Image (tube, rainbow, N blue to C red; front, side, top):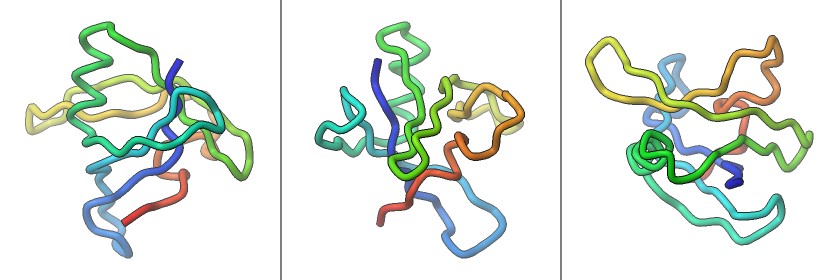
Length: 95
């Protein structure tokens, strides 16, 4: 299991937030590796690894999956479970 623990968004400070990059680790407290959203999506789609969000502050977690956007691009999201605290956009930001 790999844990996405931080997210970078395309337009911080606006209401139109698109994740461009994430930082993940192989354990819930391990060192972070920065990669693009496209790399994570490709790994998930290839069946190589399972990813979960992991909020270091709240401990909230959720399964991460890929979806096809209206423009045809692939994006990553969490499986809906009626808890906003474990969503990708709730993770701490990095620049």
